[in-house]
Each structure stands twice: as C-alpha cells, then as structure tokens.
Image 1 (cartoon, rainbow, N blue to C red):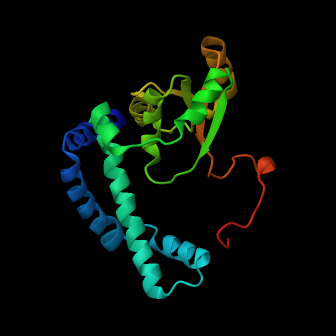
Image 2: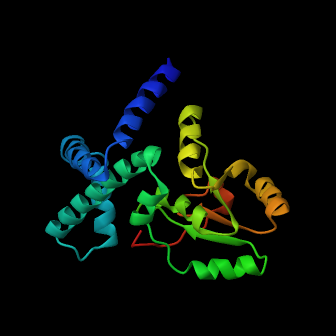
Length: 208
C-alpha cells in the first residue's frame, strides 16, 4: 500500500515537474495561500523566532517578513519538484557559482576540501556544482525513513554527477572516493542539531 502511495505521488510530482518555471510559480502562489493563510503551518514558531532574532522589529515588520518567508518556502518547494525534470541548460540560467577557482587550486595541489553550508536559498540546487568542478564531488546526507523517497532524492541530487554518502558510512565512503579519485570536494549542510548530546556546544545565535 505504501508503494502504491509513493508511485501515485511520484507520477503527480513528475507531471508537475514537466511544467515551465512560470507555471510552477503560479502553483507556488496557491501553495502559499494554503500553507500560510489556511493551514498556518508552524506560523507561531516562525513569528516567535523572528521576534527573538529581531527584537527591534514592529508587529508590521514581523508580519511582512513572515509572509516573505512563506513565499520563499513555497517557491523552494516547487523548484525542488522541478529537479525531477530539468536540464543542465535550464540550471545554467538559474544558478551561478562564484569563486570556483579557489576550489580548483586545491584540486591542482591534490588536496581535498570540505565545504560547510546551510539551508539558505534553495540548497537542493547546490549539487549542480558537480558538473562545474574537475575534482570528484560528494555530499553527506541524512537517510530518509521512506526508502522510496530516499532513492528519489538521491536520484535528484546525483543527476549532475554528485556522489551521495549517508552520514553513517561517510568516513568509509570518503576514504574509498579518495582512493579512487586522489582528492575530492565534499559538502555538507551543517546547520542542524547534532544527534549526539556529547558533541553539542550551546551558543547564543540570533538572540536565542
């Protein structure tokens, strides 16, 4: 039954991905109304975080920033769906990577590089960097509980040449990549709570 649900969802998402970006942003506008105005998904959390981070903001500024967040969130959702049917030419028009020469110089020196990132802008577009680099590229990711959706996300993220390594086997996988390629560039989203309480360091950030 779960597989049937996945395949039905996959077909729907695939059909949506066939649409041009202009149509997807119309869908995003409708999604914004549903998520923000109708459901109010995590609205209290978003507003409280903004009050904590920007205590000088007026109620009107908090409301405006909250709305902008939800519009951006919905745009990101449809842009991720588009990755099910997107070409390198389309990505070239939407994504620009600056200062790649700094990564290239380490590759020329046969040195591996670790790139730390955050969930900023559309983080799912970052794997596109793979086809812009000469060095082997990889990313460490958290495995999804649903294996079907996990495989789907790996397909989307790896379509431009990125190697994907689960957190649990990251070290062993990177050693294997180094043995095969000599050097590599590995990226990881580093803005989430560590699983191990032993490795946590509490700091004040954005007044929290």
